[in-house]
Length: 214
Length: 78
Ligand SMILES: [Zn+2]
Image 1 (cartoon, rainbow over the protein chains, first blue to last red):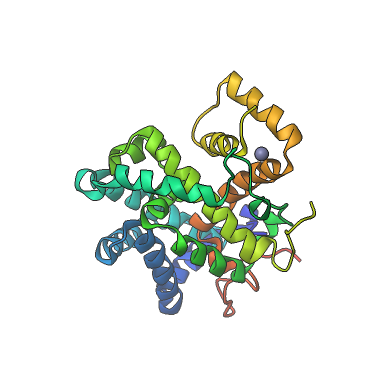
Image 2: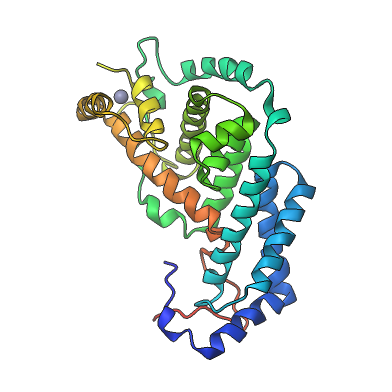
């Protein structure tokens, strides 16, 4: 649970939140998390660093009061997302010239999941996830999540992150990486199939035998 | 009847666009008889929820919360 009680954000709150950003240990930790998040999506540590710096400077300039550090962090990440979205939108053209070809190649890996009639292979059937809401409060889960993201083919990961982390719309992603909508849909389908399988095998269904029974 | 492969594709696309009436009907019919795709359908919702939490920086707030050092602590209700 990450609930903030906005009610007790008094005059002291603003100076306390500013203190958080002035705390070198906290700031460094935050910067590090932002750097990782931005690098993952931009695929370029220097571009990522620029985005992070701009976001932090913007946050300091517009400092206001929050209900504690987690609200402050949410806000700083929201600013960072906007910076990343700007970079991604501008960076069209030269990025993924061969993406169409690669989407065709990826088509074949669905055969590992589905049989000739298009039904799930027995050992690949999605299982029921136990308590998915609780996972986000677990540090170990996030390690698994990042490992699963790292396992996605680069293009799938990039498009997935543009859609789900930065929340770009389909047409914006298509313009940024120069693919068609149907190509985008194919790519997101692949990414979600892989990601859900990875999360299931390594977290949500750990220790369960999915072999035969329901 | 649509295959699981087609159904998962539609369930994925539903995250990007409003499906039309025919697509929604085909999904409902398939999901009535296919538990694996029903699970997949719920997982699409969970996946979005998880991704949004990640993008809010939730990653380092789990298990024990932020490293409190006597100041700047979140106001937790006991
Ligand atoms: Zn099915």
